[in-house]
Amino acid sequence: MDQFDPHVRWLLAAPIYLIAYALAAFVFWAMAKRRGMATDGIARVMAAGLIGGLVGANLVQLLATGLPGKTIEGGIAGGWLAVIWMKRNLGITRPTGDLFALAIPAGEAIGRIACFVGGCCYGKAAGVAWAVHDHGAWRHPAQLYLSLAAAACFVALLWIERRRFLPENGLFYLGGVLFCADRFVVEFFRDNAPAAGMTLAQWACCAGAGIFAWKLAKLIGPREMKPRTVAACR
Image (tube, rainbow, N blue to C red; front, top):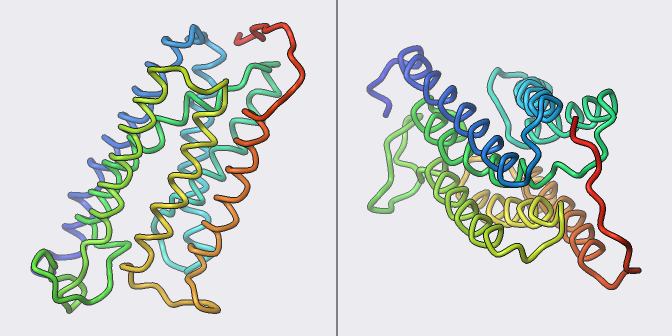
């Protein structure tokens, strides 16, 4: 990949990022229709999530590294905060996490291809047969590892969603656990400096997986039976 000028690489990556966001929005809306939540209010929630995710992805990357770029952890955090703010403003109380559960890995599966083309998030130097020459060395195509992991996560969550194993928001919490797990593993192949034995992303993944697992267990664990109601999705 080193034979391409960095500016050319980012020009090629930009439309792929746009496709990733468009696919995430499409999957979100398809899920909203499937759950009977395709309303104007939910469309605003989707827009808030996309804008908040874009801002968070860029802001966290800039604060963490001092360099331009995107980080999906910042994107998820920014999108989550924006969604909470929008739902409170619109008075929407029904859980919407499951609408994002499939949209996030769908978008990431394409977005990581853009990372590969653009040259960010690259892997460690390696001698494997499928190594790519990037940033002056033969390296693990870590971006493509993350793309494949996201695609596998999407397929698994789609299979579970079709069978309705989980109550509302369960799919989102399970997706969070899977995301943290695959990111933790792929971090071993990325060119990141460790901190106390692991990278910062791995520490964040450990914390995130614990929180998502706790929320999922709390959601599906024994609880008092209550009449099921559908809250407003204006």
